[in-house]
Image 1 (spheres, rainbow, N blue to C red):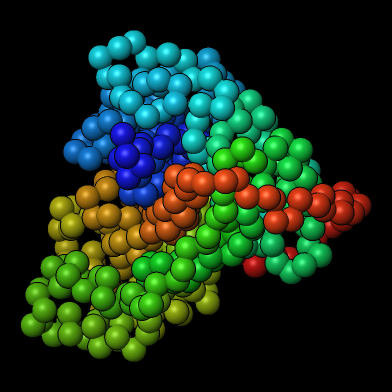
Image 2: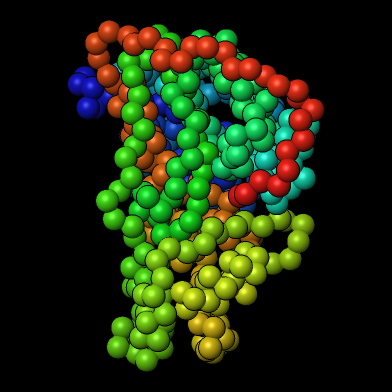
Length: 392
């Protein structure tokens, strides 16, 4: 089998509604397991894996595990339908339990509240912090590569959470991994019409490290007007209608949207963010005071299309377009608020795809191994260091 046909395997924790999974799938990874605690997001994952044609392999072989990732036991739960080298499919044979060093990529968008300005910023003291579990899984599975996604607040500015950042990198080094970098990638640089910076850590096992190159930004930024043009025309009476033309006129004055937010399950319904974000959406011709009903449930256009002066509200499907999901990816579970939160909490698929392609290229490189460019252990300061407010 040639390297271009080589199918790499992945396991993802904290999978949500599939943003990272979609991107890694587009980059050529086959998912052995997706782990998620939210029942609505799990319903979305299972629905799409069951019904999307190009997810047929996952339909047969991917474990969608609903529950607390702290209880996930991959070496007891995950099976692989091919030999230990992962090169030849054996779809007729009996699958065997996953073994250490057999997995290509362990990925996860671990919860951000411990490091986000929206939370109390307890960091390592926050019970929702799943970095320890992620690192335990690295030791257990010994995958060839690791990809961890979080909010940019974990990296900026220099002193805030430095202790914990260094602790994570040191733990990975002790486990035999080369730290390829921890970078903030802007979603708008990868075809996503949204301000959504994410901190990405990539590490590769020493015996697989032949270098790594971060993805290059696209040459052109995709705008909200471009991305929503067709769906807005459909909702507003066609591209010749006055209402569509009014929306397009406003939207064309801007470029990308503010960061979509998922919000808390404990508070209110769905909207598109705090006051500053709502003003930015209004400048793009969108009423950000809520989320519209799905098109098939719209019975009163004047109500469902939003305030005439502020513009139409987004549907869940349109929010997903802004997040970079393919239009065929369907969100299930609960009402529109639950589905919108799945979108708002997602990792944009195009960013995951770009990083996934870089990881894939690195794992399929041939030739001699490279030396770790920065093998030194990082200084770990006082763990009681309290960080001030951090940006999302």
